[in-house]
Image (cartoon, rainbow over all chains, first blue to last red; front, top):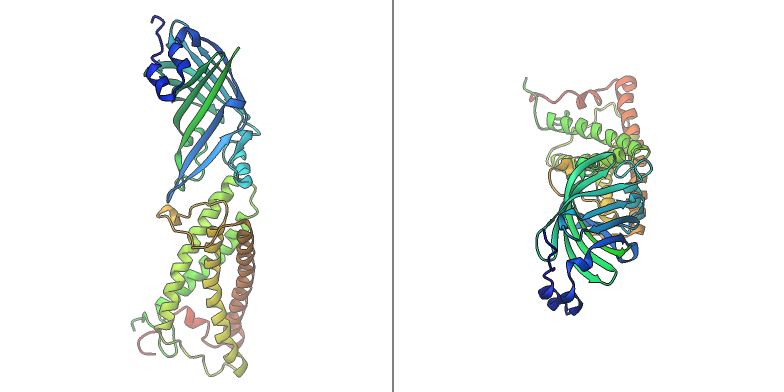
Length: 191
Length: 190
């Protein structure tokens, strides 16, 4: 695939950020380190009877590499530290850290390693990769949307659904849905 | 002779006997389950046992409503003539207290899950969502109902022990039919 201009003009007009219009993929290409300060990893699990259960991971690290010539060769690596889970309710946090859910003492990392990136639109892509948690690895898909691009920084809004039962975290079903809805903002800084 | 579903002047019908033993077994089981689930190491097992305790609590509440309705719609068999004056006065009070605890215990548990800031939904036996009682949730309310449920449980189980001791006394010491009539139902002729 030849380098393609990101069709950001319309998107930029909506956001009234003219800087986008001039951005070419070749400008975005490069390696980025995910910056915790500009990023967030939030999740929601639906509850029986309505409503949901929200949480976020406070500590994580990762890299985003955007290939200059082939978007499909771009890569995302993300490591989440489940010990840093926060729900605003201390008793729930300690439950999540315990061997009932993350078992963070024995499994301190949740890892995502992308295996393929497929362009789905001017500013969107489908990221497929291997998610490893509690010693179990499965293929998962996430949708990524370019959400900001400035000199030296790139921002993606990433969403996806993960079935927690596959990772030995089925506790609480059917009171709590098996589907974990992820909503992440990943901001990368060049270098 | 056919055994009767309803009570007679001297004997209990099988509906009352069935409800008595069913509720008795679940009540004692709930006490043991409640004791274990609060002390178990595994958080996962504790969570699952607590949900089971909630399920049986609602089953108990349903059975108790049925039992009270049945009791109010049926005559209660009279105590045998051998029963003394003091016990004749104490027994209805003890039975009233037993009924009060049977109702108060599940209700206090329901209040506890309703006010809990953990907001864990209640699904008896994973069948349907049981709504919360209309009580404001707060840590203070949760502490209050936790304590209330705990004290009611210990007082209730003490009352059950007293009740069982009285039944055994009737059977082994007084040798009357008070205990036996809670095992064998009335037959139409009595």
